[in-house]
Every structure is written in structure tokens, then in C-alpha cells.
Length: 357
Image 1 (cartoon, rainbow, N blue to C red):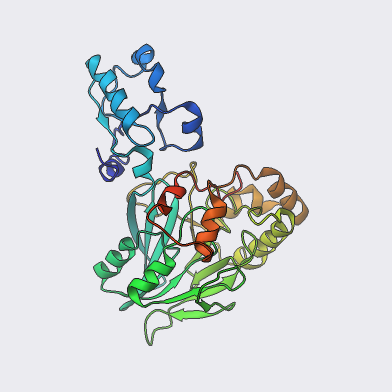
Image 2 (cartoon, one colour):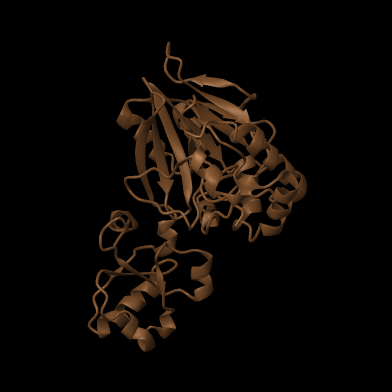
């Protein structure tokens, strides 16, 4: 079974029984939501846990252990499928869902295994792309489907968990690449200024405006779609807020993050839809629903947003945990200090870990 075939099944009733035969530490680090773990070397002894299951899909890191697990199941008369490519393939599996906000269409492109969210926002014949991953065909095909020309490519910040596709998409389309000069990019781009607007449809007062929200990185930027939606990058998630420690300045960055949240983000209307750049393991993703919530709901559910500044900083510094895998090399690539190669995608494997747990 391919990972693309698995995605719609995860919304089914019943859902498949995902049997992950990796070691417990591998599964604890990164897994598909709902997976049941029995290490391969324990499977024979624990057959009673799976023998009556239906719709079994066996997975591992790259597929080899899953094939061995399926053979063990078959020797006991239990049918199963093997997830081709395992977690390595899951990291590059995409789906998308769309909705209309403020006169524009927002297409949310979800990279399921990485928890990455990117956006194509279009109106009339034009669109902008926010936080693209390296698979630029996802954005080219989406724009073509809606009859849009990609005029601008935007990143919300210098990403540390995945390789940005912004430069590749600019090269493929001739679009204008706009970034915050407060992050240390070493290639040519058009610098964003606070409050700058990109008009989506000529003659229509529909635009995407940039607002500086330093904290996760110094150049972190939130994009506003009128009063209808905000694209918060790694500043505000549905389950937490962005971590401030990746630049080795956790305490001062946490102060910046607090002020950005309270002076820039939380000043928006309760009805504003929040579109983050990531989702964590605690966020359920369904094929027909946007990964998004109204800002008013987040005010009441996220305890971090209820803290005063000193308590917020103390909480943020104390609760940052393991950093994204290979994040320093990913930052070098995304800042232009190191080139993207055919092997670069391998360093992205693993969870995004850009939120405070």
C-alpha cells in the first residue's frame, strides 16, 4: 500500500489497524497517529494482540522490517498490507483542502508526515504561496488547477525543521520572493517591510499584508488576509506557540515572542481564522477539514496565551525539549549557506518539533 492510498483510509470508519514494528524509542520519536507498536522481534510472541484485527497495515522506517512483519503475520494466517517506503515515504505524503476567506480562496497543502502546512492564496488570476516545501509541483499543480499565476512566494521565517521550496518555486515561476531581512538569508530576495501589502486581484481591495512577529526567529512574519485570516508561521500553533531557543537566545527571544503574540496576534478579531505552519501529534487531521481554528477559541484553550510576560518567559524557557533533527544543517541550507542536493531531503526525516511542548 502506498502512503497516498493510506491517507483517505485514515478518515474511514473503521480506520486501518496501523502496526508499527519499529523499536519503541523510534515510535515515541515519530509515528503515524494511532499506530500500535509491537517491535519486530516481539511479534511472534504477541500475535494475540493482532490476530483478530482487520485492515492491518504494517509499517517501519523504510519498509524492510514491515515486510518481515507481514511475513510473520501471514505464517499465522493473518492478512496485512505493507506501507511502501514506511515513515520515509510518509514524510513526503501530501493532501490538500480549500476554503474561502475574505473573497480569496485558501488552499491548505498538508505534508502529513512532517506536520508541515503551506498555503496557496488566490483571487482573480493571481495567487501567492506561503511556506512552500521542496516539492514545488504541489504548488505549480494547485495554481494551474485554479487558473492562477503565482506572483509572489513568501516564507514566514527561516525554517529549521524542513527545507524551504521558496527559491525553487521562484525559479520555476519567475515569482517575486519576499522575505524578512531580519533573518540571515544570504541570497537575493525582495525585503519585506512591516505592514507591506501584496494585492491579489487588480482593482479589488483584497491583499495579503505582512506583520513582523519576532520571537521564534527575529524575522518571523505573520501574513494577514484582510480581517478574515492570519498565517502565523511558527509564532502561534493550534496546540501551542513557537519555541524561542533555536538561535541560542531562548530568554530574550521568549520576551519578543510574548510581545509579538500580545501586541500583534491577539489584537486580531476573535473571528479571525488562524492558519499555522505546522501541526503536532495532538492535532487531528481530516481530509475534508482545514487545520485551522478561530483566534477566539485559541484564546480560551491555550494556557500559554493567558500568562503574564514573566511567567510566559519562564514557561517557554523551561519547556523547550528536543530540537528538530539536523536543524542546524537545515538552517544553513535555507539561509543559502549550503546548497540543496539530491540527498538533502533525507535530513528532513523526523518530526518538526517547532512548538513548545
